[in-house]
Amino acid sequence: DAQTGETQSLTQSLAIIEFLEEAYPATHKVLPTCITQRARARQIAEIVNSSIQPLQNLYVLRQVKTVELIGVPGETDVKAFSQQVIVRGLTAIEALVSKYAPVESNRFAAGTLSPSLADICLVPQIYNARRQNVDLSAYPTINAIVARCEALPAFQQAAPQNQPDAKN
Image (cartoon, rainbow, N blue to C red; front, side):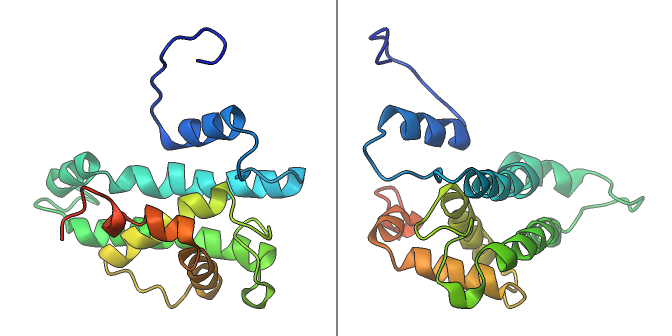
């Protein structure tokens, strides 16, 4: 901690991202300065963080597999459940970003000219959607935004397959 000199440990992606934003103000800002774009960035990040991602955790998926859903006993199709959650979340995000960053605009998810918190949360979720074989053709704006992000060195370096512990 810069104020106390104590070592701090943080968990939870959004808390860590906002900590870094505030601790290193001279670096690229992931929260836009425009209040509306900043709210949009947080809105999209929260859809991923609260509506999609928690239901993709292995613990949750293992529980879903053995729980009785919709009155049907037996094992649940976990992959179908996962896909359904992703589709629901991406549909909500597509509705927003199609207004904030139309395909032809070359803008990022919150309507910004550079990536924001929204993009930082969206790109890994698209990686997960691809891994889960979700058909992404219904999300042209998201696809365009993700392509813009994936063309940037920072996103390429952060890609799961480029991490030291990635399985080849």
